[in-house]
Figure 1 (cartoon, rainbow, N blue to C red):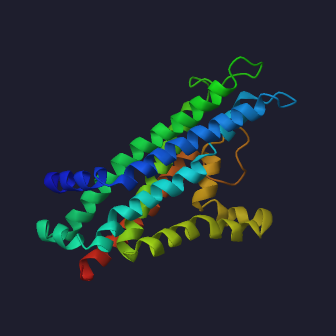
Figure 2 (tube, rainbow, N blue to C red):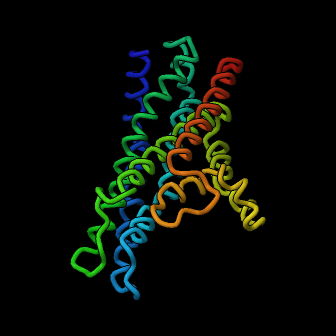
Length: 251
């Protein structure tokens, strides 16, 4: 496993798309935070610290798509280039290959997710510095927890991408399916109004929006901790499905 993980790390860091997607996730979070802060500088009446903080992490909606695409490409990129045959020749145990990809991608995406989350928070606070708008400190109730859980959520989306990539094996199809699963069910749930909350609380995007809300969480949705655990459960199920497909199909 150690050698397989090292092999996967070399492959991950040597592809330019890895760094473009990672940088894009951080920039998206930072830009959203700064934009929210600058927008509130002239806002009347003065917004609360928690309101600005909630909105400053809104870039996670885009960041999750970038990191989940990273997870997909970690698997499908090898199928597209044909190097998956060399990988399986070097490590014949396919479950070990998928486990190594999961470990490496998960660790990398979690790190990027946390950096992006803190970037969104800090840029939002810097944008309102020097105004009468109250700041949201990491020591304030719920602030640090929301920042960390947002980063963990982003890391979990990358693992979902890895599992889906192993199942579908085609970059375009897997990314399209992933984006559809993120947004289409939420739109469908919204058609049912308040009754859609019963279904909506299980949907990733709504779980994200509620996990970063330190004021006025949407009634009926799960708390941040439950949302992150549920995302981890989704990732586990999809990764197990990917493991089954990887074992049964030819490369």
